[in-house]
Length: 234
Length: 291
Image 1 (cartoon, rainbow over the protein chains, first blue to last red):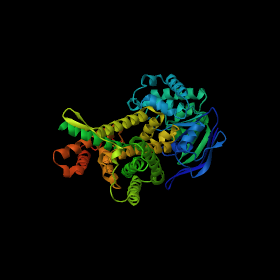
Image 2: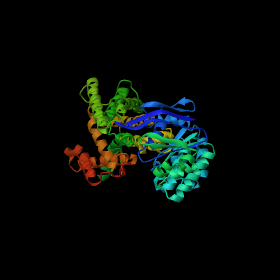
Image 3: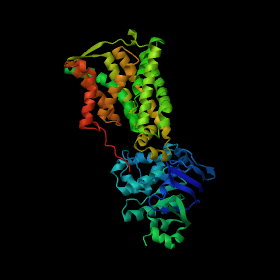
Image 4: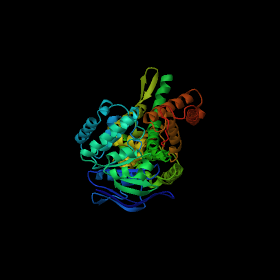
Protein backbone atom coordinates (compact mmCIF):
# COMPACT_ATOMS: atom_id res chain seq x y z
CA UNK A 1 0.00 0.00 0.00
CA UNK A 2 2.75 2.43 1.02
CA UNK A 3 6.34 2.03 -0.11
CA UNK A 4 9.19 4.23 1.04
CA UNK A 5 12.35 3.70 -1.03
CA UNK A 6 15.81 5.12 -0.29
CA UNK A 7 14.50 8.23 1.41
CA UNK A 8 17.09 10.64 2.80
CA UNK A 9 16.30 13.86 4.66
CA UNK A 10 18.59 16.66 5.81
CA UNK A 11 17.89 19.33 8.40
CA UNK A 12 20.36 21.97 7.31
CA UNK A 13 23.73 20.25 7.38
CA UNK A 14 22.51 17.45 9.62
CA UNK A 15 21.42 14.20 8.05
CA UNK A 16 18.19 13.12 9.76
CA UNK A 17 17.32 10.09 7.61
CA UNK A 18 19.68 8.01 5.54
CA UNK A 19 18.42 5.68 2.80
CA UNK A 20 15.27 4.58 4.57
CA UNK A 21 13.33 1.69 3.05
CA UNK A 22 10.08 0.63 4.61
CA UNK A 23 6.50 -0.13 3.71
CA UNK A 24 3.01 -0.87 4.91
CA UNK A 25 0.62 -3.44 3.47
CA UNK A 26 -3.11 -2.95 3.44
CA UNK A 27 -4.76 -3.87 6.74
CA UNK A 28 -1.55 -3.95 8.77
CA UNK A 29 -0.40 -2.18 11.89
CA UNK A 30 3.27 -1.31 11.40
CA UNK A 31 5.30 0.14 14.26
CA UNK A 32 8.38 2.35 14.05
CA UNK A 33 10.35 2.19 17.28
CA UNK A 34 13.61 3.70 18.38
CA UNK A 35 15.23 6.17 20.73
CA UNK A 36 14.65 9.90 20.86
CA UNK A 37 16.04 11.62 17.79
CA UNK A 38 16.33 8.41 15.75
CA UNK A 39 14.16 9.93 13.02
CA UNK A 40 10.78 8.31 13.64
CA UNK A 41 8.77 11.52 13.46
CA UNK A 42 10.80 12.66 10.45
CA UNK A 43 9.70 9.55 8.53
CA UNK A 44 6.03 10.32 9.21
CA UNK A 45 6.49 14.00 8.32
CA UNK A 46 8.25 13.06 5.09
CA UNK A 47 5.38 10.75 4.14
CA UNK A 48 2.89 13.54 4.98
CA UNK A 49 4.84 16.00 2.86
CA UNK A 50 5.75 18.42 5.67
CA UNK A 51 9.46 17.65 5.48
CA UNK A 52 11.01 17.49 2.00
CA UNK A 53 13.23 14.52 1.14
CA UNK A 54 16.45 15.10 -0.78
CA UNK A 55 16.33 11.73 -2.50
CA UNK A 56 14.18 8.65 -2.76
CA UNK A 57 10.64 7.81 -3.77
CA UNK A 58 7.42 7.40 -1.78
CA UNK A 59 4.49 5.65 -3.46
CA UNK A 60 0.99 5.21 -2.10
CA UNK A 61 -1.46 2.89 -3.85
CA UNK A 62 0.66 2.95 -7.04
CA UNK A 63 0.86 6.75 -7.20
CA UNK A 64 4.01 8.67 -6.41
CA UNK A 65 3.53 11.16 -3.58
CA UNK A 66 7.14 12.26 -3.06
CA UNK A 67 7.32 16.04 -2.56
CA UNK A 68 3.57 16.44 -3.08
CA UNK A 69 1.98 19.26 -1.00
CA UNK A 70 0.69 18.06 2.40
CA UNK A 71 -2.94 19.00 1.72
CA UNK A 72 -2.96 16.96 -1.49
CA UNK A 73 -1.50 13.92 0.29
CA UNK A 74 -4.45 14.08 2.72
CA UNK A 75 -6.76 13.94 -0.29
CA UNK A 76 -4.95 10.79 -1.45
CA UNK A 77 -6.06 9.07 1.77
CA UNK A 78 -3.18 9.48 4.23
CA UNK A 79 -3.79 11.36 7.44
CA UNK A 80 -1.45 12.00 10.36
CA UNK A 81 -2.08 12.46 14.07
CA UNK A 82 0.93 14.60 14.93
CA UNK A 83 3.18 14.25 17.94
CA UNK A 84 1.90 16.16 20.96
CA UNK A 85 -1.66 15.98 19.51
CA UNK A 86 -1.58 19.56 18.21
CA UNK A 87 -5.31 20.16 18.55
CA UNK A 88 -6.45 23.67 17.62
CA UNK A 89 -6.54 24.93 21.21
CA UNK A 90 -8.74 27.99 20.74
CA UNK A 91 -11.29 26.20 18.58
CA UNK A 92 -14.11 24.06 19.93
CA UNK A 93 -14.14 20.26 19.81
CA UNK A 94 -16.75 20.44 17.07
CA UNK A 95 -14.69 22.90 15.03
CA UNK A 96 -11.58 20.75 15.41
CA UNK A 97 -13.51 17.82 13.95
CA UNK A 98 -14.83 20.02 11.14
CA UNK A 99 -11.25 20.94 10.28
CA UNK A 100 -10.39 17.23 10.15
CA UNK A 101 -13.16 16.90 7.59
CA UNK A 102 -11.91 19.84 5.54
CA UNK A 103 -11.49 17.68 2.43
CA UNK A 104 -15.06 16.35 2.60
CA UNK A 105 -17.39 17.91 0.06
CA UNK A 106 -20.84 17.83 1.63
CA UNK A 107 -22.14 19.06 4.98
CA UNK A 108 -23.86 15.74 5.44
CA UNK A 109 -20.58 13.82 5.16
CA UNK A 110 -19.07 16.12 7.79
CA UNK A 111 -22.05 15.60 10.12
CA UNK A 112 -21.79 11.82 9.66
CA UNK A 113 -18.05 11.95 10.35
CA UNK A 114 -18.62 13.88 13.56
CA UNK A 115 -21.22 11.34 14.67
CA UNK A 116 -18.73 8.52 13.97
CA UNK A 117 -16.10 10.31 16.05
CA UNK A 118 -18.58 10.73 18.90
CA UNK A 119 -19.51 7.03 18.77
CA UNK A 120 -15.83 6.09 18.94
CA UNK A 121 -15.07 8.69 21.65
CA UNK A 122 -18.27 9.43 23.63
CA UNK A 123 -16.32 11.79 25.91
CA UNK A 124 -15.89 14.20 23.02
CA UNK A 125 -19.65 14.45 22.51
CA UNK A 126 -20.05 15.80 26.05
CA UNK A 127 -17.44 18.45 25.35
CA UNK A 128 -18.60 19.38 21.87
CA UNK A 129 -18.76 23.16 22.44
CA UNK A 130 -15.72 23.43 24.72
CA UNK A 131 -12.45 24.92 23.51
CA UNK A 132 -9.93 22.13 22.88
CA UNK A 133 -7.43 23.64 25.31
CA UNK A 134 -9.79 22.86 28.21
CA UNK A 135 -9.61 19.11 27.52
CA UNK A 136 -7.37 16.72 29.46
CA UNK A 137 -4.37 15.13 27.73
CA UNK A 138 -6.26 11.91 27.07
CA UNK A 139 -9.27 13.75 25.67
CA UNK A 140 -6.98 15.80 23.44
CA UNK A 141 -5.45 12.57 22.11
CA UNK A 142 -8.96 11.28 21.39
CA UNK A 143 -9.82 14.54 19.66
CA UNK A 144 -6.66 14.42 17.56
CA UNK A 145 -7.47 10.86 16.49
CA UNK A 146 -11.13 11.61 15.86
CA UNK A 147 -10.10 14.65 13.84
CA UNK A 148 -7.72 12.61 11.67
CA UNK A 149 -10.38 9.96 11.03
CA UNK A 150 -12.77 12.63 9.71
CA UNK A 151 -11.12 12.58 6.28
CA UNK A 152 -11.72 8.78 6.12
CA UNK A 153 -8.03 7.97 5.59
CA UNK A 154 -7.06 4.55 4.28
CA UNK A 155 -3.67 4.96 5.98
CA UNK A 156 -3.49 6.55 9.43
CA UNK A 157 -0.11 7.75 10.70
CA UNK A 158 0.05 7.95 14.50
CA UNK A 159 2.93 9.80 16.14
CA UNK A 160 3.47 8.94 19.83
CA UNK A 161 -0.18 8.44 20.81
CA UNK A 162 0.88 7.37 24.33
CA UNK A 163 2.99 10.45 25.04
CA UNK A 164 2.27 12.02 28.43
CA UNK A 165 -0.70 9.79 29.22
CA UNK A 166 -1.37 7.75 32.37
CA UNK A 167 -0.84 3.96 31.91
CA UNK A 168 -4.59 3.24 32.15
CA UNK A 169 -5.26 5.71 29.38
CA UNK A 170 -2.43 4.33 27.24
CA UNK A 171 -4.12 0.91 27.36
CA UNK A 172 -7.42 2.49 26.36
CA UNK A 173 -5.88 4.42 23.46
CA UNK A 174 -4.15 1.28 22.16
CA UNK A 175 -7.43 -0.66 22.35
CA UNK A 176 -9.01 2.03 20.21
CA UNK A 177 -6.11 1.89 17.74
CA UNK A 178 -6.75 -1.85 17.33
CA UNK A 179 -10.48 -1.12 16.85
CA UNK A 180 -9.74 1.48 14.18
CA UNK A 181 -7.49 -1.03 12.42
CA UNK A 182 -10.14 -3.78 12.58
CA UNK A 183 -12.68 -1.50 10.99
CA UNK A 184 -10.45 -1.27 7.93
CA UNK A 185 -7.87 1.49 8.41
CA UNK A 186 -4.22 0.62 7.87
CA UNK A 187 -1.97 2.05 10.56
CA UNK A 188 1.63 3.19 10.82
CA UNK A 189 2.55 3.86 14.41
CA UNK A 190 5.53 5.70 15.88
CA UNK A 191 6.15 4.93 19.54
CA UNK A 192 8.72 5.29 22.28
CA UNK A 193 6.67 2.84 24.30
CA UNK A 194 8.10 -0.07 22.32
CA UNK A 195 6.45 -2.74 24.44
CA UNK A 196 2.95 -1.44 23.78
CA UNK A 197 3.67 -0.81 20.12
CA UNK A 198 5.04 -4.32 19.53
CA UNK A 199 2.08 -5.87 21.36
CA UNK A 200 -0.43 -4.59 18.78
CA UNK A 201 1.70 -4.37 15.61
CA UNK A 202 2.02 -6.97 12.87
CA UNK A 203 5.46 -5.80 11.81
CA UNK A 204 7.96 -3.28 13.12
CA UNK A 205 11.06 -1.34 12.14
CA UNK A 206 13.74 -0.37 14.63
CA UNK A 207 15.37 2.98 13.88
CA UNK A 208 18.82 4.06 15.01
CA UNK A 209 20.29 7.47 14.17
CA UNK A 210 18.41 7.89 10.92
CA UNK A 211 18.80 4.35 9.62
CA UNK A 212 16.75 1.20 9.89
CA UNK A 213 18.69 -1.16 12.15
CA UNK A 214 16.23 -4.04 12.32
CA UNK A 215 12.98 -5.05 10.68
CA UNK A 216 10.65 -7.96 11.07
CA UNK A 217 7.51 -9.40 12.58
CA UNK A 218 6.56 -7.60 15.79
CA UNK A 219 6.55 -10.86 17.80
CA UNK A 220 10.07 -11.73 16.60
CA UNK A 221 11.40 -8.29 17.44
CA UNK A 222 9.77 -8.44 20.86
CA UNK A 223 11.76 -11.59 21.64
CA UNK A 224 15.02 -10.36 20.07
CA UNK A 225 17.59 -9.98 22.91
CA UNK A 226 19.13 -6.81 21.42
CA UNK A 227 15.75 -5.13 21.13
CA UNK A 228 14.76 -6.21 24.62
CA UNK A 229 17.97 -4.78 25.97
CA UNK A 230 17.80 -1.47 24.11
CA UNK A 231 14.09 -0.65 24.09
CA UNK A 232 12.25 -2.84 26.53
CA UNK A 233 14.38 -2.03 29.54
CA UNK A 234 15.97 -5.40 30.16
CA UNK B 1 -19.08 68.58 24.16
CA UNK B 2 -18.10 65.09 25.30
CA UNK B 3 -20.75 63.45 23.15
CA UNK B 4 -19.52 65.43 20.15
CA UNK B 5 -15.93 64.26 20.66
CA UNK B 6 -17.13 60.71 21.11
CA UNK B 7 -18.95 60.83 17.77
CA UNK B 8 -15.97 62.35 15.97
CA UNK B 9 -13.64 59.88 17.67
CA UNK B 10 -15.70 56.84 16.76
CA UNK B 11 -15.94 57.93 13.12
CA UNK B 12 -12.17 58.39 12.90
CA UNK B 13 -11.53 55.30 14.99
CA UNK B 14 -13.65 53.09 12.72
CA UNK B 15 -11.31 53.87 9.84
CA UNK B 16 -8.27 53.01 12.01
CA UNK B 17 -10.01 49.79 12.98
CA UNK B 18 -10.59 48.87 9.32
CA UNK B 19 -6.87 49.23 8.61
CA UNK B 20 -5.77 47.64 11.88
CA UNK B 21 -7.73 44.47 11.04
CA UNK B 22 -5.46 43.82 8.06
CA UNK B 23 -2.33 44.10 10.21
CA UNK B 24 -3.68 41.82 12.86
CA UNK B 25 -5.02 39.14 10.52
CA UNK B 26 -1.79 38.92 8.54
CA UNK B 27 0.26 38.88 11.74
CA UNK B 28 -2.00 36.17 13.15
CA UNK B 29 -1.42 33.91 10.19
CA UNK B 30 2.23 34.41 9.15
CA UNK B 31 3.67 36.44 12.07
CA UNK B 32 4.60 39.32 9.76
CA UNK B 33 3.95 43.01 10.27
CA UNK B 34 2.89 43.89 6.74
CA UNK B 35 4.32 47.40 6.50
CA UNK B 36 2.99 47.72 2.95
CA UNK B 37 -0.54 47.61 4.37
CA UNK B 38 -0.72 51.42 4.70
CA UNK B 39 0.10 51.71 0.99
CA UNK B 40 -2.74 49.35 0.14
CA UNK B 41 -4.98 51.75 2.05
CA UNK B 42 -3.51 54.63 0.00
CA UNK B 43 -4.06 52.71 -3.25
CA UNK B 44 -7.64 52.07 -2.18
CA UNK B 45 -8.20 55.80 -1.74
CA UNK B 46 -6.74 56.55 -5.19
CA UNK B 47 -8.78 53.88 -6.93
CA UNK B 48 -11.90 55.22 -5.22
CA UNK B 49 -11.01 58.75 -6.31
CA UNK B 50 -10.47 57.64 -9.91
CA UNK B 51 -13.77 55.77 -10.00
CA UNK B 52 -15.69 58.77 -8.67
CA UNK B 53 -13.71 61.47 -10.50
CA UNK B 54 -13.15 59.95 -13.96
CA UNK B 55 -15.70 57.19 -14.26
CA UNK B 56 -18.43 59.16 -12.44
CA UNK B 57 -19.43 56.20 -10.33
CA UNK B 58 -21.37 56.66 -7.14
CA UNK B 59 -19.41 56.34 -3.93
CA UNK B 60 -20.57 52.84 -3.00
CA UNK B 61 -19.78 51.37 -6.39
CA UNK B 62 -16.41 53.14 -6.33
CA UNK B 63 -15.69 51.64 -2.92
CA UNK B 64 -16.57 48.19 -4.20
CA UNK B 65 -14.22 48.56 -7.19
CA UNK B 66 -11.50 49.83 -4.92
CA UNK B 67 -11.92 46.86 -2.59
CA UNK B 68 -11.72 44.41 -5.49
CA UNK B 69 -8.63 46.12 -6.88
CA UNK B 70 -6.87 46.04 -3.52
CA UNK B 71 -7.79 42.40 -2.91
CA UNK B 72 -5.87 41.49 -6.05
CA UNK B 73 -3.08 43.85 -5.06
CA UNK B 74 -2.75 42.30 -1.58
CA UNK B 75 -2.64 38.78 -3.02
CA UNK B 76 -0.02 39.76 -5.60
CA UNK B 77 2.17 41.50 -2.99
CA UNK B 78 2.07 38.43 -0.77
CA UNK B 79 2.89 36.17 -3.71
CA UNK B 80 5.82 38.24 -4.99
CA UNK B 81 7.32 39.76 -1.86
CA UNK B 82 6.53 37.47 1.10
CA UNK B 83 5.91 33.94 -0.15
CA UNK B 84 9.49 33.40 -1.38
CA UNK B 85 10.66 34.44 2.11
CA UNK B 86 8.17 32.25 4.00
CA UNK B 87 10.87 29.95 5.38
CA UNK B 88 13.53 32.59 6.00
CA UNK B 89 13.75 34.77 9.10
CA UNK B 90 10.89 37.13 9.91
CA UNK B 91 13.34 40.01 9.70
CA UNK B 92 13.93 39.37 5.98
CA UNK B 93 10.19 39.41 5.33
CA UNK B 94 9.85 42.60 7.36
CA UNK B 95 12.55 44.31 5.28
CA UNK B 96 10.80 43.10 2.14
CA UNK B 97 7.55 44.63 3.46
CA UNK B 98 9.23 47.99 4.06
CA UNK B 99 10.64 47.80 0.54
CA UNK B 100 7.19 47.18 -0.94
CA UNK B 101 5.86 50.10 1.09
CA UNK B 102 8.48 52.55 -0.23
CA UNK B 103 8.06 51.23 -3.76
CA UNK B 104 4.28 51.70 -3.74
CA UNK B 105 4.29 55.21 -2.29
CA UNK B 106 6.98 56.30 -4.79
CA UNK B 107 5.00 54.73 -7.61
CA UNK B 108 1.89 56.61 -6.51
CA UNK B 109 3.85 59.87 -6.45
CA UNK B 110 5.08 59.27 -10.00
CA UNK B 111 1.60 58.47 -11.29
CA UNK B 112 -0.53 60.96 -9.36
CA UNK B 113 2.00 63.66 -8.46
CA UNK B 114 3.01 64.97 -5.07
CA UNK B 115 -0.04 67.18 -4.46
CA UNK B 116 -3.01 65.99 -2.47
CA UNK B 117 -6.19 65.51 -4.45
CA UNK B 118 -9.75 65.89 -3.26
CA UNK B 119 -12.96 64.05 -4.00
CA UNK B 120 -15.41 66.12 -6.09
CA UNK B 121 -18.13 67.81 -4.01
CA UNK B 122 -20.72 65.64 -5.67
CA UNK B 123 -19.14 62.47 -4.26
CA UNK B 124 -21.05 62.75 -1.01
CA UNK B 125 -23.20 65.64 0.13
CA UNK B 126 -22.98 65.70 3.88
CA UNK B 127 -25.61 67.21 6.16
CA UNK B 128 -25.55 67.77 9.91
CA UNK B 129 -28.06 66.08 12.16
CA UNK B 130 -28.58 67.17 15.77
CA UNK B 131 -28.66 64.53 18.43
CA UNK B 132 -28.78 65.69 22.04
CA UNK B 133 -25.98 68.13 22.67
CA UNK B 134 -23.95 67.07 19.62
CA UNK B 135 -24.00 67.04 15.84
CA UNK B 136 -23.44 64.06 13.65
CA UNK B 137 -22.92 64.46 9.92
CA UNK B 138 -24.39 62.04 7.44
CA UNK B 139 -20.80 61.40 6.34
CA UNK B 140 -19.90 60.23 9.84
CA UNK B 141 -22.98 58.00 9.83
CA UNK B 142 -21.82 56.59 6.51
CA UNK B 143 -18.31 55.91 7.85
CA UNK B 144 -19.49 54.29 11.06
CA UNK B 145 -22.20 52.32 9.24
CA UNK B 146 -19.96 50.99 6.47
CA UNK B 147 -17.21 50.10 8.97
CA UNK B 148 -19.61 48.32 11.29
CA UNK B 149 -21.14 46.41 8.39
CA UNK B 150 -17.74 45.31 7.08
CA UNK B 151 -16.59 44.25 10.54
CA UNK B 152 -19.76 42.23 11.08
CA UNK B 153 -19.23 40.57 7.71
CA UNK B 154 -15.64 39.79 8.66
CA UNK B 155 -16.70 38.35 12.00
CA UNK B 156 -19.23 36.15 10.21
CA UNK B 157 -16.64 34.91 7.71
CA UNK B 158 -14.05 34.15 10.38
CA UNK B 159 -16.43 32.47 12.85
CA UNK B 160 -18.93 30.65 10.67
CA UNK B 161 -17.59 29.82 7.22
CA UNK B 162 -15.36 26.93 6.26
CA UNK B 163 -12.59 29.19 4.94
CA UNK B 164 -12.83 31.37 8.07
CA UNK B 165 -12.40 28.36 10.32
CA UNK B 166 -9.47 27.28 8.17
CA UNK B 167 -7.97 30.76 8.74
CA UNK B 168 -8.24 30.32 12.49
CA UNK B 169 -6.78 26.82 12.31
CA UNK B 170 -3.89 28.01 10.13
CA UNK B 171 -3.15 30.91 12.44
CA UNK B 172 -3.02 28.55 15.42
CA UNK B 173 -0.89 25.88 13.82
CA UNK B 174 0.34 26.18 10.28
CA UNK B 175 1.70 22.69 9.72
CA UNK B 176 -1.12 20.85 11.50
CA UNK B 177 -3.62 22.79 9.37
CA UNK B 178 -1.91 21.41 6.28
CA UNK B 179 -2.18 17.90 7.76
CA UNK B 180 -5.96 18.42 7.79
CA UNK B 181 -5.95 18.88 4.04
CA UNK B 182 -6.12 22.67 4.25
CA UNK B 183 -4.28 24.43 1.44
CA UNK B 184 -2.44 26.91 3.65
CA UNK B 185 -1.14 28.95 0.71
CA UNK B 186 -4.69 29.58 -0.38
CA UNK B 187 -5.72 30.49 3.16
CA UNK B 188 -2.85 33.00 3.38
CA UNK B 189 -3.83 34.57 0.03
CA UNK B 190 -7.41 34.77 1.22
CA UNK B 191 -6.31 36.50 4.43
CA UNK B 192 -4.38 39.12 2.46
CA UNK B 193 -7.40 39.63 0.19
CA UNK B 194 -9.73 40.18 3.16
CA UNK B 195 -7.37 42.54 4.97
CA UNK B 196 -6.67 44.53 1.80
CA UNK B 197 -10.38 44.89 1.01
CA UNK B 198 -10.98 46.39 4.46
CA UNK B 199 -8.02 48.77 4.05
CA UNK B 200 -9.35 49.86 0.65
CA UNK B 201 -12.75 50.65 2.12
CA UNK B 202 -10.97 52.59 4.86
CA UNK B 203 -8.97 54.47 2.24
CA UNK B 204 -12.05 55.63 0.36
CA UNK B 205 -13.81 56.65 3.60
CA UNK B 206 -10.79 58.59 4.88
CA UNK B 207 -10.34 60.21 1.46
CA UNK B 208 -13.90 61.51 1.59
CA UNK B 209 -13.71 62.43 5.30
CA UNK B 210 -10.62 64.64 4.96
CA UNK B 211 -11.29 65.38 1.29
CA UNK B 212 -7.67 64.63 0.61
CA UNK B 213 -5.88 61.76 -1.12
CA UNK B 214 -2.11 61.78 -1.41
CA UNK B 215 0.75 59.42 -2.12
CA UNK B 216 2.03 59.54 1.47
CA UNK B 217 -1.28 59.19 3.30
CA UNK B 218 -0.59 55.49 3.90
CA UNK B 219 2.41 56.14 6.10
CA UNK B 220 0.79 57.89 9.06
CA UNK B 221 -2.53 56.04 8.79
CA UNK B 222 -0.67 52.74 8.55
CA UNK B 223 1.49 53.47 11.58
CA UNK B 224 -1.50 54.58 13.65
CA UNK B 225 -3.48 51.52 12.67
CA UNK B 226 -0.47 49.40 13.55
CA UNK B 227 -0.46 51.09 16.97
CA UNK B 228 -4.18 50.30 17.23
CA UNK B 229 -3.55 46.65 16.40
CA UNK B 230 -0.83 46.40 19.06
CA UNK B 231 -3.03 48.24 21.55
CA UNK B 232 -5.83 45.72 21.00
CA UNK B 233 -3.42 42.79 21.02
CA UNK B 234 -1.79 41.88 17.73
CA UNK B 235 -3.36 38.77 16.22
CA UNK B 236 -6.74 39.44 17.88
CA UNK B 237 -9.55 40.53 15.55
CA UNK B 238 -11.85 42.02 18.24
CA UNK B 239 -8.71 43.62 19.67
CA UNK B 240 -8.02 45.48 16.43
CA UNK B 241 -11.59 46.80 16.33
CA UNK B 242 -11.41 47.95 19.96
CA UNK B 243 -7.90 49.37 19.57
CA UNK B 244 -8.89 51.38 16.50
CA UNK B 245 -11.94 52.90 18.18
CA UNK B 246 -9.99 53.66 21.37
CA UNK B 247 -7.20 55.36 19.44
CA UNK B 248 -9.67 57.43 17.40
CA UNK B 249 -11.46 58.65 20.50
CA UNK B 250 -8.17 59.33 22.32
CA UNK B 251 -6.82 61.33 19.39
CA UNK B 252 -9.95 63.46 18.97
CA UNK B 253 -10.21 64.04 22.72
CA UNK B 254 -6.54 65.04 22.86
CA UNK B 255 -7.09 67.58 20.11
CA UNK B 256 -10.26 68.89 21.80
CA UNK B 257 -8.54 69.57 25.11
CA UNK B 258 -5.91 71.63 23.34
CA UNK B 259 -3.09 69.33 22.33
CA UNK B 260 -3.79 69.58 18.62
CA UNK B 261 -0.11 69.95 17.76
CA UNK B 262 0.46 66.53 19.37
CA UNK B 263 -2.31 64.97 17.30
CA UNK B 264 -0.13 62.30 15.69
CA UNK B 265 1.97 61.79 18.81
CA UNK B 266 -1.00 60.61 20.87
CA UNK B 267 -1.29 57.27 19.10
CA UNK B 268 2.39 56.52 19.55
CA UNK B 269 2.45 57.65 23.18
CA UNK B 270 -0.33 55.13 23.78
CA UNK B 271 1.64 52.50 21.83
CA UNK B 272 4.69 53.01 24.05
CA UNK B 273 2.57 52.92 27.21
CA UNK B 274 0.86 49.70 26.15
CA UNK B 275 4.16 48.03 25.35
CA UNK B 276 5.48 49.01 28.78
CA UNK B 277 2.46 48.08 30.86
CA UNK B 278 0.76 45.30 28.97
CA UNK B 279 2.86 44.02 26.07
CA UNK B 280 0.17 41.57 24.96
CA UNK B 281 -2.32 44.41 24.37
CA UNK B 282 -5.89 44.64 25.63
CA UNK B 283 -7.21 41.37 24.20
CA UNK B 284 -4.02 39.66 23.11
CA UNK B 285 -2.89 36.34 24.49
CA UNK B 286 0.57 35.36 25.59
CA UNK B 287 2.58 33.78 22.87
CA UNK B 288 3.40 30.26 23.86
CA UNK B 289 6.61 28.98 22.40
CA UNK B 290 6.10 25.56 20.97
CA UNK B 291 8.70 23.02 21.95
